[in-house]
Length: 119
Image 1 (cartoon, rainbow, N blue to C red):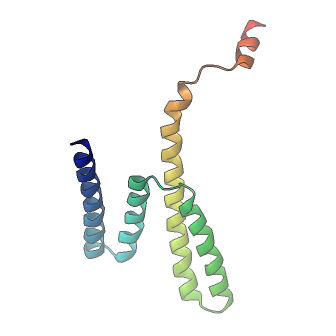
Image 2 (image 1 turned 180 degrees about the vertical axis):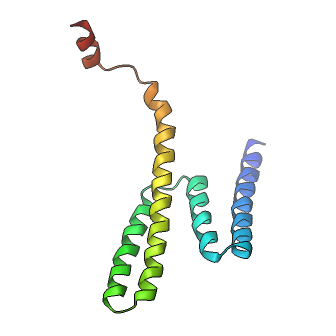
Image 3 (image 1 turned 120 degrees about the vertical axis):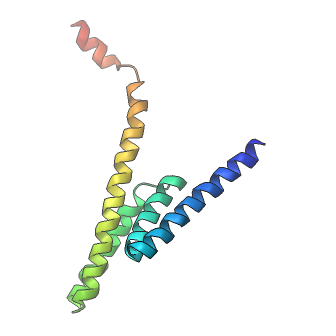
């Protein structure tokens, strides 16, 4: 029964992400839909938080190459995508930091701290 409920939760999560993508693509823009969907997928699937940052750096390199080759429009578009991925990566890092903060608070003080208090 628990496995069945767990599979239903996954279906609900995927359906919600797909619904957000469709709503943003229809009412806002495809770019916004892709960016928000990738952010939600990273949260739902617990992807590596550094992955969007790596993608941002790759996009920045591609953007610089395109501008150097005279393709300023395409380079600017790729630079915007790099910024979006950078923002996603930073937000995911902050979320991870806040989540791990609860674990850090439960760790007792180190031996060095106790020795400093005794002196």
